[in-house]
Amino acid sequence: MPVPEPALAVLVLGGTSEGYALAEALAGRPGLRVVSSLAGRTAAPRRPAGEVRIGGFGGAEGLAAYLRDAGIGAVIDATHPFASRMGWNAATACAATATRLLRLERPAWLPGPGDRWQNVADWNEAAAWVGAQARRVLLALGRQELAAFAGLDHVRFLIRSVDRPDPMPPFAQAEIVLARGPFTEADELALLQSRGIDSIVCKNSGGTATDAKLAAARQLGVRVVMRQRPARPVLPTVPGVAAALAWLGRP
Ligand code: NAP
Image 1 (cartoon, protein in one colour):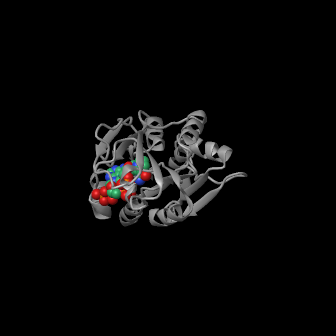
Image 2 (tube, rainbow, N blue to C red):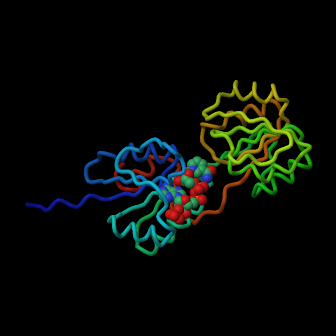
Image 3 (tube, rainbow, N blue to C red):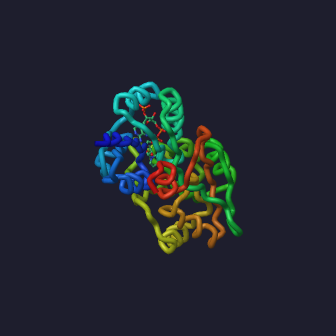
């Protein structure tokens, strides 16, 4: 009798819609074992399909030890474009353990005709631009990313955040709107117009859940201060789940 091949164990580094979609596509397939890893930042995260582990690995060395112990045969880094540390750790750990590694990353947004974008490398550069050029600003950032803007007392900020910033940086003029995407273009137009927003600060996450603000900004001539993605290791990279399945040899 032929001996069945052991299942291929695939580790999905997740925390993104792509990570959930990939786990969903892989779970239950014969000959595959899928383990999703979440950082554990969210108190009650949605559970991906298949096995789940939560929390950091303890750097690249910890991840390498995990890959060996769990018998992982392939890693797919589907973390958020701005979660770069995990990407570097994955590259180091996979090189050390000769584990196949793929990057699954949604394409970045690109400016089109009518867009008024200012690309910046970090939040300090964004704050310097805002301080000099803007007066009424929508900060569409994570709540841990606000501090660089707090000293701009002459600027009126509208802060949109999933959870209330805690601690709240010392803004002189700030209103908080608690909201979680996706947002429609009509909602974004209404928000920008009702507050007289002249500039939006955001990061180039890509995807469709939060791109309506860019279309609304284009319509209204609002400027967009767009933080560029951090550097990542050069790896085989695919934009979606179908291409990731093909890379695994399980289309
Ligand atoms: P990061 O800077 O790349 O990672 C910081 C540390 O968090 C890593 O060194 C690692 O700890 C741990 N970690 C990150 N992702 C992990 C995962 N999937 N499984 C286990 N441990 C993980 O990442 P971050 O910006 O803090 O983001 C954390 C998570 O939130 C990511 O998984 C990302 O996909 C998700 N997320 C981030 C953003 C964003 O804007 N940054 C937006 C949406 C979702 P150890 O070194 O101890 O292994």
